[in-house]
Image (cartoon, one colour):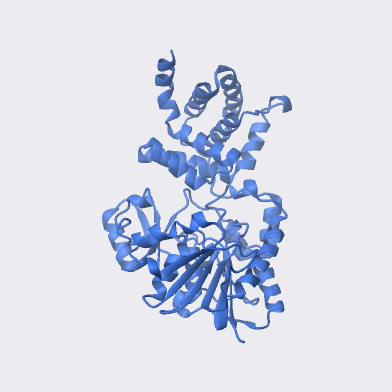
Length: 454
């Protein structure tokens, strides 16, 4: 019997809808990142491209409008009947998204497969419960179901954004964006034009174009980046265009010594390592040693000398680990809410709390002041956050400037192609830099730059 049960359920558990439900459960119930969980499940399942695209659309779409889906589901339930099973919640959310937003999919297919999936995983009793809820949702299906491209935001998040962004920028930031999110690539030694030409020749069905970064290419419908031509040879790195602009804004020059603080897995580290060239040196600093260990293999793939980068596992909340003011430039991409990336990472809305912008802004100021101790006289300090909130970027930069008159505002170099700073001295990067019909759509960053004058 057990063998027959696995055979019957195998196709169900390996379908696009099953993958979407499993990823939603991991993201909403276990704190996983959507992109990583989805990539892992799709790699395991080896679905055809069309099915992989459907799974991706369900996951990202459902996360964008999760409060709306929960309201739709709750309207069909009594309080006592609210599902406590995590898998059942994920299955209901995935099906509710398809019924409300994917009009091209027939209702009976959505309901029948979702019920079969729950029966295979949780048995007939919960399958019957799911069937009853989804039949009600199907009866109330919108006449014109459209994909969820705009975010459904908690009120406090909307208030934060309204207080931080001018109306035109706010409208552009909140404008609908296509699913799935675009892939950002950073050209390496051969440059952007050569990378774009090579990808266009190899992938005629893909959507490809230059990003706002002078090194960047934006791509859709290209599959896994590791399978793209040139990846193994180090022709490109995977990096969102806003992050590229932040690193370029530091203005690294050949031969310089640079500290990349809060370096993480080293996306900006490798860009800086190429910029400083043979005579330069990068110190990657992060409290998480496991992340820093990912830098060495990436340097090998990009054919950059390993000795050009040294790494230091240092908790800046405690000290500088013996490092002193000897760096020409220091960049700190500080821990933040990440709200600037919410279109690509809608799961952030599940985890953030109203007090987080202020709490993290206070942490950023402490870390920024500590990182400033690494800058030599005449050197440059850069501070960035991937969030547009006022409590994080602008307020932190203002407080730092008031407390440290030895640091004077500086400008980004022209080759970086950054926008001019606003009146408060902050460079604001975001989707407002490009037209709505462009493939290029940077995440929202704030960047402050200072030069140490003493």
